[in-house]
Image (tube, rainbow, N blue to C red; front, side, top):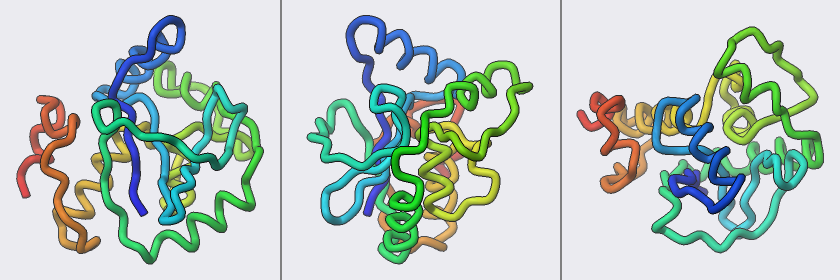
Length: 166
């Protein structure tokens, strides 16, 4: 199991949302996926209408990956199966800008769904970059027991310099 973090910019209007997402979340990532060992990726996507699982052909030039301990997979998959097809939470993303938007427990955005599936409390507080930082903290502490990802974009971002300290 691993987490995938989108660091590229798509052409046209979707690229505007990639840039806006990175700006709102203060980092290099605009979208996240949880990739299960069977190759199915789970997340919530505006383009796909909400929570869903699907196969994605990942281009490593456009995505970064962080390994997740295997023991998370079963519960994460159960979470996604029980929340499949719930709608996308547009206001959840706006919350990062204005902070006043209320949490809607029936709607999900990408990193919120990923963090909920991993068992995090208050998953709506994590954007893609906060999710990556949370994962790196768990790896650095030794709590997860997975390899340190050396070449990922967030480690090149000066705003996250403290993450480099293993």
